[in-house]
Image 1 (cartoon, one colour):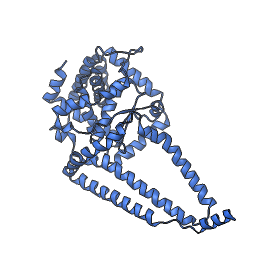
Image 2 (cartoon, rainbow, N blue to C red; image 1 turned 135 degrees about the horizontal axis):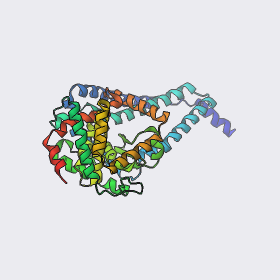
Image 3 (tube, one colour; image 1 turned 60 degrees about the horizontal axis):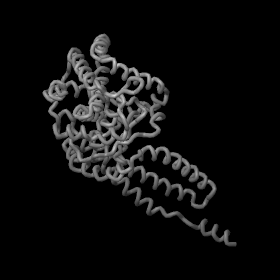
Amino acid sequence: MKDKTKHNKTAGFRPPLFGASIFLALAALVAFSLVIFREIAFRKPAVAEYYTTRIFSPLASVWAWPFSQFSFSLTELLVVIGTPVLLLLLILGVVRLFTNRACRLRRLLRSALVILGTICILLSLFLVFHGLNYARPPLAAKLDLPLREHSVDELEEAVRQLARAAVQARQGLPESNDGTVDIGPLNSVWKAAFDGWDQAAARWPALGSPVRARPKGVLLSHYWSYTHIVGLYMPFFIEPNVNIDQPAFMIASTTAHEISHSRGFASEGDSDFAAFLSCVCHPDPVWRYSGLISAWKSAAHRLWEEDRDRWSAAYREELSPAIIRDLQAESLYWEAFETPVADFSEQVNDAYLKANNEGDGVKSYGAVVDLLLAWLDTTDAELIFSQP
């Protein structure tokens, strides 16, 4: 009798829709307002710059603090635990939907309202902590770098100049048993992450930011490498995530790149270049070498596309045996992860970048070369490269 009474009460219960409807309406209003604001910012970059410097930076510095207290990646935790939990909840929801027929359509509608509202909240967080920064004016303008077309001769000279600087930075670095760079404990790398940014910001105020989001290594990095992703910035936590299974000499430059996203540089070209400047200003030669060899790889790839004979000559004549060991080890590492998963990951990344107004998609990573070529013509480059 008691069970039957309980069943009758449950059968007569009508899930309320008002609260879920209000939740969705407010979340959608906020998300829609931010989308409209971003469209305005793309048309008026000064608005985007004001937002990044006056709103995003102080807000992100506060938002990042509690998440930076965790030494492990919250993004990784969310993926590893959150994915199966969401899948389980979905299965339980479907089972309950078919086993309990009372107000089935109403319960389904309420769940849909809550899910859509949650999606709107996540979209709003993405826009606030990353998406709006895509509308910023180009970094070249803030650094007074005159972008222009460069000849193949100038490109080759830039590749050689970067190679010589990388060779100098590579000398004397500790090595592992296989002859590649040994960067030491990762905790030391994370602690030194902002030393270069502080030096770079003192030289170029446009690189300054109060945001000091703690970089974190992903424990499952080996499996992450199947996607060919070496770093990821998670806007929800203001969290730079780094693939720590990749060849060690690239970890510092990858860290600098993801930190640059957390400091308001959204476009890949600007983010790469800001990271490069932070690395070459870093007091630790490991960071300088990582930034220089990363820049060399970008410029050398452009030269390889333009003239493979010149690329081959610059490679043979400028790189040291130690650097060649590093590059060969990196090539062998990534060969083991050439799978359809990597191709799919690249397609997803390409679509994501295009959706954020980077028309070249994954090719936008090569935009850093234009900035490098312009910067190498300046006296700043001469002063930095002339330092021991």
